[in-house]
Length: 253
Ligand SMILES: Nc1ncnc2c1ncn2[C@@H]1O[C@H](COP(=O)(O)OP(=O)(O)OP(=O)(O)O)[C@@H](O)[C@H]1O
Image (cartoon, rainbow, N blue to C red; front, side, top):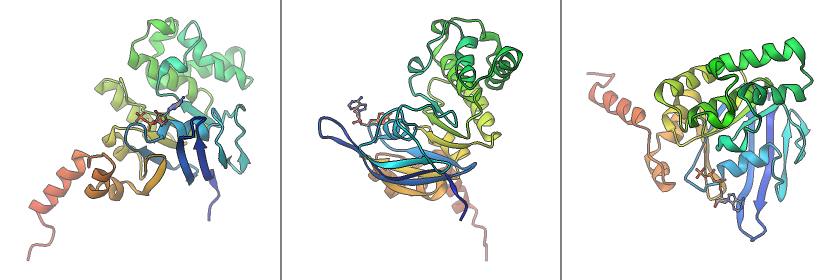
């Protein structure tokens, strides 16, 4: 078996109030694998990502990245986390400075740093916003700036929390094409199930902090009863294709 890039065992989070938000989450993500993380509002998707990246400490269980423990509060440049709320991530005066922050922490400086920042801005299509104050960006532009700030560190695992939220159709398509062309592993939490279907061969469905399904995207997303039980709907493209298949059976006798 190939070694997992990310590996969690029995990750559990109980809040101070006694509420258990994550229950015994055990999962593996292989190098280069793209995994969708779906589930209803409040299921625990963001909380799981915060635990995976060591932003918050789980009450029990362990997270390993490339065989090494992920220590809460540590610097883990191998894991690039794009927050759901861009405001939680952006804090420098300008877009370029914000994108430069992580790369500077990795030791880049001078022309090498400038080149890395320019490349990251170009990849997400916001070169023209380099000198803009971050609080003068639109919601979608902020999300792209956050993504650039993570890509500049060239992480081996990207954790994207609602990456298409606030993006217009052109930028959503640009994002999908960009992510599809990347060879990093990804965990993508999203309610945009068509995006998940396009990008992720595997999907994990969580509800009330537990993994309730983990399998091939088409079998999880296409399971109408499973999806309905957890407040989800089968994405239109799967329904449409099923209807087309039904209307034009492959085996005509
Ligand atoms: N800082 C916090 N303190 C206490 N409870 C919290 C905190 N953050 C989130 N929660 C609760 O933890 C649970 C899981 O929230 P989380 O944000 O992980 O869900 P989610 O699956 O990402 O939801 P959504 O799809 O709405 O983004 C929810 O019940 C939420 O109200």
